[in-house]
Image 1: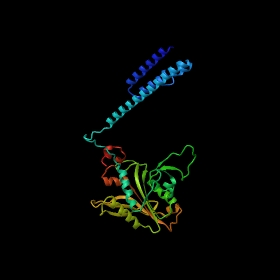
Image 2: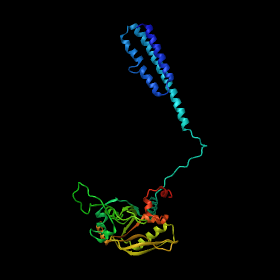
Image 3: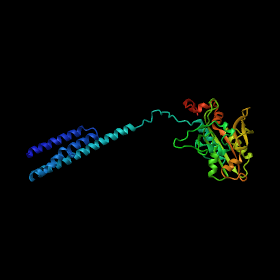
Image 4: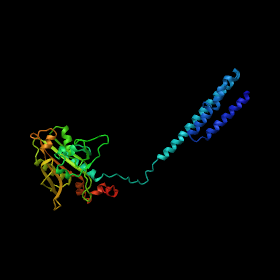
Length: 346
């Protein structure tokens, strides 16, 4: 090929590349032009590869011209990339610009569920009284849910807790009472779990969800939230129990004139056991609100403590019913309905 023909190829290549760069609208177009001209199989690259087969005099001229064109194309591509980069930045700045004179939009805020609200409030009150909040599993064992709480198998008191039993794992042939699983019927199992790992004196509350196999109506559901309390010491007594519960309800309902009374009640894991009633200052009726009593000596023994040295009280209350009373809700099923019209009121 003559030098003139070779120079025509350079002119044609330059015209094609510069023309394509003028029309390029984004970085992808530039990369495509770069690959077609300067890539491994690009037009100019192929010319440079062919230099080794040319006579030395021709190689000098063609090589010098090719390198000069390569440098010129690279500079033109750099200029085009900077131009497109500035354009993209300008468009981005315009998109991010905010007209502060436009009226603001009201942001929808989430709502705490009433059970979450009452749980937070009750926990905060007891924690201010020196109680520690602890948690336990919802899938419990028969041992912790019943046996360690003085409710052995075939005990008539088990009828008080209609239980959801869980199926045994297929790979396990049989389960003993200590490992047989159920959905906890109360939060009391955590009394045992905590005392097994901690030495008295101690004060704890255990909020959590419980389950009982019973029909649902306006005041009953198969799932509910309970708050368990436990205090163990050398001289803990019923007077301290009454004082703690009375102070709690006065703070919860913000009612200094709230009255409280104990009535005899039966719970297998306390002796004596009491039912707790309250009467708000603006009410004429007594309301049953909790169950409580002094921890049964057999429960103390179950965690390898000496009942002659340690004694304590325990109490349990339904958070759902407390929330119903505090927020004037007439149907417990509303808590679990998922109806946002109900939730958005809180």
